[in-house]
Length: 92
Length: 146
Image 1: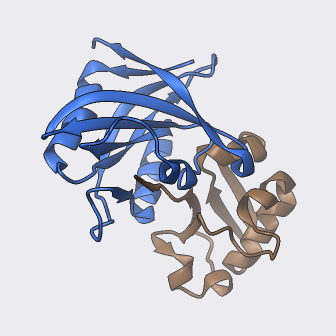
Image 2: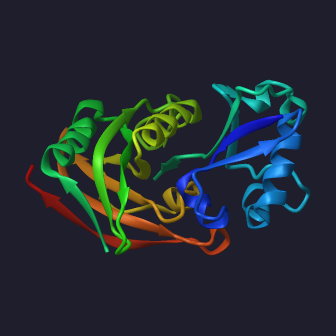
C-alpha cells in the first residue's frame, strides 16, 4: 500500500530535497521504516540510538498524533498522509 | 543572507505580541527559500500559545496546528521558513531555552521585545545545524514596502 509522507523543511536536505515521499507499509512503523530505507540519511534525524522517535519529532497520521493512536502499530490505509513536524517551543 | 518581509506582515507579527502582552505570542512564517540562501515571507500565521501554565515566559505551538499550516503551505507551493514569538518586558534576544527547543534547522526564529504592551525591537536569528551542534546566527531583517 502506498501512502504519502510530508517532509518538513529542515529534513529535506536528508530526503533528496523532496517535500513528499511515497512509502509503503501496513502500519505507521512499517511506513517510517520504508521511508528511512528509501532515504537513509533521514534515520538519525528521526530516530535516537534506541530506535525510538526523537523526543522533539512529532508524527501525525492525518490529524492524529500517533502517540495517542497505537504508535508504530497504527494501521494505515491508502488515502492516509503521514506528516512529520519537529516541535516549536521556547522560553526565557 | 536575510529574511525579507513585507511591511504589513512585519507589523502584523509585532502587533500580535502587543495583543497577547503580557503573555508571549507565537506564530509561523510562510514563504520561500531563495536561491541565495535567504528567505522571503509571504504570509504570517498567528498561533495559540499552549503554555498556559507559564505564558509570560514560555511558548509552544500545538503540533497539530503545525501539521495544518505545513499542509496548507505546501498545497500553495510554499514552505514554512520560520517562526516568531515575543519576549514581554525582555530583550529581543534568544535564550538558552529558545535554542534548546529550536529544531527547524535552516529556518528563521524572529523575536520581538514588548515593553509595557508596545513592540520595541524585532530581531531574527537563523538556526544552523546539525541538531547536536546547533546554534543561532544573527540574521538581517529586510522590510519591503508592498
